[in-house]
Image (cartoon, rainbow, N blue to C red; front, side):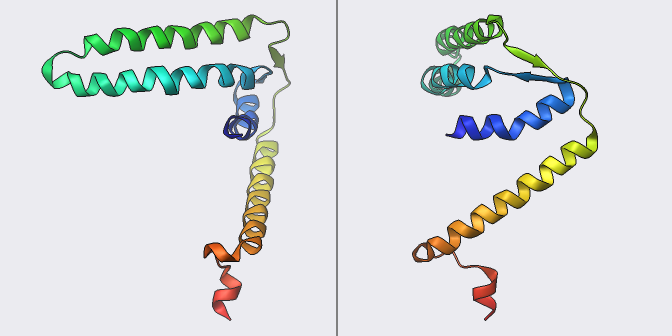
Length: 130
């Protein structure tokens, strides 16, 4: 779910800056994130722990293998047919409108969730003021 939300949240900025929408970014993230979380990051932490002893190289080599795996996923998804949709330039007003609407939607959903779960100690400002 986090990958879907992150992909949707960053899509307007990607389109605005690059005039492209990567269509397989969700697939790439679903394949690459487990490699990063389960292989690259643990080896990075081990490298940090070994660094004071001058032994970080023992951990950075396997970490590099994971990074190569992530790059292989990126190259593979980029090579798929129709991997990128080229779009016309997005006006800044459109990006601002999308950000404002997304913020309003997020606040509305958050407020509705808070009202639906009062047992979790989340109170609205209106209830506190009364």
